[in-house]
Amino acid sequence: MTPKQRQAVENHKAQTTHIDKEAIKAFLDTLKYPIYHLDFETFQQAIPQWKGIKPFMQIPFQYSLHIEHADGRLEHCEFLAEEGSDPREVLARQLCVDIPTDVTVLAYNMSFEKGVLRGLAEEYEMLRDHLLAIADNIKDIMTPFQQKHYVTPSMNGSYSIKYVLPALVPEMADAYTELNGVQNGSEAMSAFASMSKLEENEKERLRNSLLEYCKLDTLAMVRLLEKLREV
Image (cartoon, rainbow, N blue to C red; front, side, top):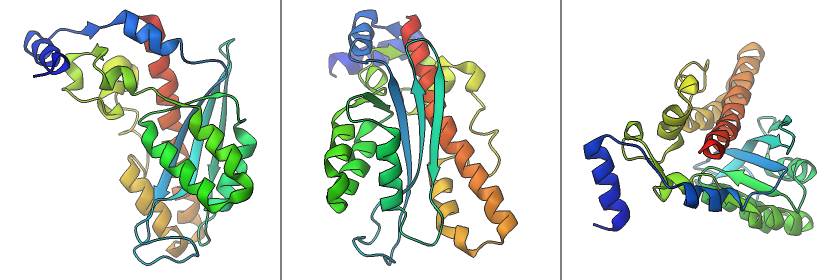
């Protein structure tokens, strides 16, 4: 086993928590205020409806953005596309309004957000520089957990946010299961893909569910960052 694997096994057997304070501090030192906590939701189409889309390509239709300021102030911005038309350009334009080119952006598993941003940059040349600047500024809050700098037995060896969040922020342990309608990314994908077939009242209910779910994803990152600062 690698040293990290051996450490993880020993922590699990002993049921102990391991915290590498120096490594966590080094990660925190890379973040500069204001911090833009970003999460995308995407869906796929087997048979593309719109130009520039490939089968089963990840099509972004929604994002949530919590903006954390040095004084503790927290702002929230969000975007959810209208169903029935290609959501990418209007989403990309609004994202460039909401996120400047020179700020710290935080994501959980940043490879997904980077991929979405780079895909949008390839498609919309007029927004390319701005979108690539956002992608270049992304940091990954998953890193301290993926690199085993912070490990607790209740994470069950996983660094998924669905395990990390209840382990570090127990008051949010049931936050996702308490949501009404949309509780995970797969449900969000299916909800948006099917929305155009629904009656108006059901459509509105589902839109609200999507907004609440995506908002929780970025709020979870804010709370995890608070816990990392406490160590």
